[in-house]
Length: 605
Image (cartoon, helix red, strand yellow):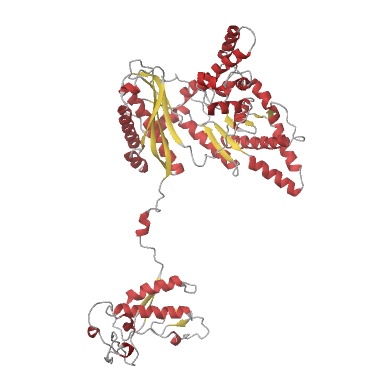
């Protein structure tokens, strides 16, 4: 797991980043880009100090940081083509290097050469810090972690070479420990946590620094710990409870930078034999069975969460949120929704160009302040959301590259949804957000259904004239194949309007080899077309027959056979009875030589 060391804190970000204002005249994309350039500075030139904008009137733009983050993530993905790279946030990523480590060990075993592995192990150890020193020569697990540490070293070096950013990292056998380890040796260092060092790390690790325990759930777990530890200790329960409560309040900081408070190892108190029943704990603090199982695993340093590759596919949702002091009029909430709509439209435009995808839905999220006058009364902050279809006119604008029109369309749709929820539900409001989700691939130009209705491109043709017909065939250097036959059929059927002398295909046996007796081709006696002997010559003869039939009167029409045209010299024969008489009769025409005509096969019986 890696983390960017070059993150500015909130105040510095406010001084350096571009901002969006809630205004009826939202800035255009070009204006926002210019503002970003002026605020961020050019190259390594530091931006001049400025007073931080009023957070209640402006929103920080993180476009510059997102672009830098995208470069870092793509660099990591390129460094590990066989590994999964998961973007966890704008400055955090997880990399699963299991396949790479397996490949290194497998290759060393096949060559019976351990020198390369030993060199990589030494590089990984030298570049890392430890909770407890590794023993790669005595432990297979430690040896694999050392190889993982070498992979982390190379990844950090690749990012620094391409971007100039330093990174800290954590190497462990699961995501939870790797994340926590990445914060232990900052800046520009990495930490390895072996399986043997897991318990030791949990003894000093603040419980609230674990992902998922930094917010409301962490507060409920703290109350459960106060209850469990107070009941399990000897002495005055009031004094012990007071001490436990002071300990819970002593924690400072947020996330992986949390210090003080209960340690992660304290979670075991919830699951010891002397602790109160889990049912009782769940009943008091609202900790359900799934959460209690997860907490028990966390207390042992276990985490089965997999690394899911998402750098190439993009995030599942694109979001824009803003928190502010409580507003009591919907118009003020609309102002922030419009700012967020323009920001989201700009990001979706970039996302569409880069990943060729478009969202199907948008989620409107809001946080309402406690309101005793609401029906029913709202006694605490409530965060709720409403999902609606992504506006079609916004999609049309994004396809055309018009970010401003897309922002306007998205804002209007958000206004309607927000107003439909009613002021008693949404006001007073302290936070709004828009999140585009459910992405689908966008059509690729030229791959739509219209391609089936276009005329295929035709290759160059060559024309052969002769006494009876005109034939166009595809011009090729190689021997004609079935495609040439199909092209010849189309050409023959449309080439000539001359009257036919007889409905008879040429005999393939009459094809001649032409002037060059050594030629592998034979010439058609009717048109002179040169084809390969055998099947190709027969196919070409059939083409002439089909062409001749197309020029004769259709034989499937109703009417008497006497109305059919006759070739000159053709005689009408007396109908012959089937089975010696009494059967159904049919007429058969013959040509001048007394042979039945081909048209007789198509006569209605």
